[in-house]
Length: 479
Image (spheres, rainbow, N blue to C red):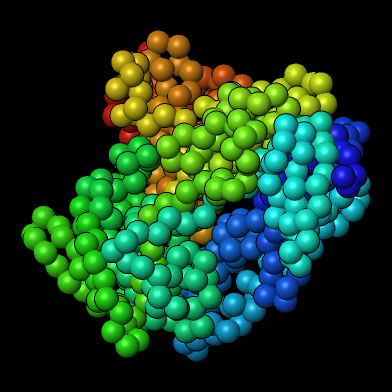
């Protein structure tokens, strides 16, 4: 038996590394097990998010956005320059440097907080035992009073489109294209599909997105989803709804994809195909069945509202449990669990978790849509405001989009906020804070906002809830 710990965390992604740091800060002897190895054969922390997900994709989204700005919009604001060229190799170099800085930062934080980093694959083999298989195949068993499973998730693969080298890839492979594909196919018009499709579309790829559902972004308020679809179509993304992929065949350096839609069977040829149909929990082999931790039919670990499993002393957080697969949700669960283990009272408000799609403009939301609220029998009132009427958005040459607030008609409490705009991912924090504190639309309406700022659109949307918007004609007035 190796060292004994108060807490052992399996997985060093956004949920795991945060849980480990928090536990160590609270005086608990903590270890974190991570199996991820980079191209150099070195163990790296950060999980999918930092290595092949949130961070690298945002690096490419930002560089591709700046390229489009320089190519298409600088002249509009008085900056003349020769036609810019996209240097994909340098973009990938920048992306990799961003990854390295973030990963190195976590290792430094582990050291600063006294977290023991254990390299290898962790498995719960007893109620207080974790077996770690090192990269050399050697095993060691560690004892812990508490175990936190933060094993994350992996991309879903589908039979009609088996992965093939660098032609048919998941989101991971889409971050490694060394040149811009002329014809790009994306299966799935969800968050990941739209983001990665946007990256390569901006750089010049003819991009087609095949979505099996007949509704675009059904988790977003319909008004905002409609506006988003219009803007992305204007940018060149060909989004085909109700398009069910039935098969594919790689022929040389291209792939032929077959799908069916309202017009029948179709066929289209791409140089690259990205499969983005969701992610599944990575829980197979993480817990010995004899331990008794329950899983559902999709592989998610059963937990209560405070992430306790059916076995005392064993917790699970992040992508391997219920709820949205979001890095920030995993991190907050990690903090909550560490606090509980340390004997503190802690809980998480799952009704106030923001979501963001980092396209350009960005799409962000928190809480209910107008449609969801009405389906629950809640009488609502809403307020919307276009960024085209916002002075700072116009000065930024970014007038696209809108902000919308959904409030309870009886109590005025904010039920949801949905935004499509430049920096929507930053602006949505107002909605999250408002909902966390149970704010009313009037609370935001009575708040003094800095001028000029794009945040004023949120202020105007709050005013518009009661027909009192200042910088647009109101649909109706209320006393």
